Length: 302
Image (cartoon, rainbow, N blue to C red; front, side, top):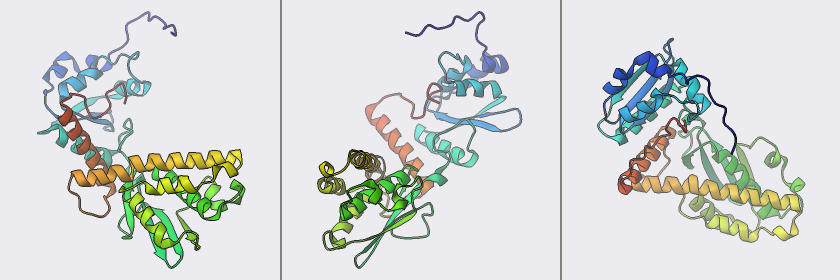
């Protein structure tokens, strides 16, 4: 165990010194959102809890041995703390998402930039298959999503695996350059030959992107002849399969479940709606298991 340096003086408690214990005692034990603001009026952090007094009380002492440095830096900048009561924890979480999207506070990380989320699309014409991704969910109808920003990497993995399956390259150097450079292309076209009919491939892709079935993954694993590939190429294929499997669980499959849980009609879920559905789903699971665990990170986790 690493040795801990002893402190010569007690650690500072900036929020307790600034606001006093009476302030924290006056915070209601009710669901709501809280906003921490700097002396210049900049919103530093937005959070929510089913018990505002309990949550804000965790910031009061701000022990640097128990909190991330990011949170310790934040509490030294806080000049104002306000809160807004909500009727339920579910409404508090949705209200938090609204404020995060509006203000994008400096010390928040999650759910502050849904503009980075994207949609995946697919088109077929004859023996041609087009796959693409876009951040604009209103421009085209043949879309799936919204998905978190990691979907872009999954799109690259999907294109490489499909191309490799259709063309059986002996080396990763045989792959199209746009699929192995650092930047994922926004669109890629496949000319499908008789060995893999578009009419058979399209339903696999559609079911995969809609979160209904991962049969596409099993098909890609079956037709990938790893033993015939160089070691580096084998590692690339395995990594792409893992990326795609993770994306299916956290993207299409999860979104399919969310739409079913909340009675969302068929079609895409807008970027702003995705975080709200995730929040409501998390609250539902907490209610069912009858736990008191908060659905946002405590100051320990940011």
